[in-house]
View (tube, rainbow over the protein chains, first blue to last red):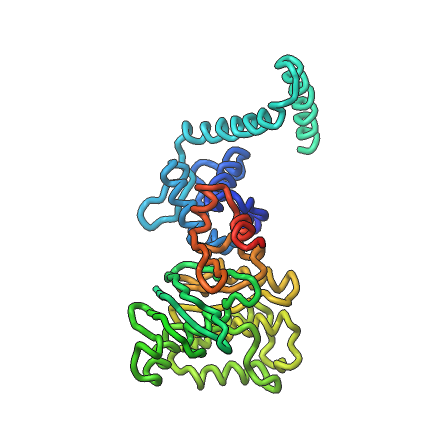
Length: 135
Length: 241
């Protein structure tokens, strides 16, 4: 990724910044901008690129190491894991989070599952065809 | 670590600090918040030994530096200068000086502490020209140059009084970048600011002054994690009348 791509722009001030950094990484992985085995910036480099506190970068990397999203061997730079199972689970996790949020939003609206699914089917098809014409 | 304990100070018989206690650590950005007149700047000045205290203790890496508790004023001043760099809320250099003259002044005045190479790097980063005269600097550039003078001193601690006040958005953003890069690496930073939005995501620890004491101190990431509260949420709870 180009240096400016690591910039995360706006942060939600009510959520720990290190967790937002982890989520950015997961999104980059799920969307294919980061791939298995890719090297990532050092903690210090990430702090400068993303304009965050170096302690936050440190904590985000520690969290990603614990979740086995990234691996750091000896003195070599950290890499995105090559473990396909973990990479697939990130994609599932992001989709599930988004669906949970969506369901929270419509919790109080009276709508049947069928109606909802039909709406999603239509809109999703439109989105996908839009994305294909973009590409 | 700098440990401030039970700091007391009166100003024209009016108590300003009524027992202020907090700590700041190396490798962390600590923000001292408070409404106007709460005594934020006074606390920084007290750490620098610039105001006479009525009581309390200030330990810098274990050494007592409050004059009424410690010994020789000259030894103390030397110790402070080697350990703490104080960046006041406005540039304290004569307006007639050119920037290169001010840099040389710092080199003469702080031998062994002034890091000329670092100063040059920062001048380039901020786009400051050495041939400019201080009097002709814009507010934003004066604030940046003020920061260069303070940060290029190789001290383990840095105190910054309102580094963002009264300057434009892009200067504020440029200054905020300093908190991410290596010029502050492993140093302990204490900052006072009204413009909390600019640095909210960069702060490790908040210390909130109110009515002459520390009303609350907390780790900002822990606050977000445990209570889903932003720093501004907590400030509203503590300061809203």
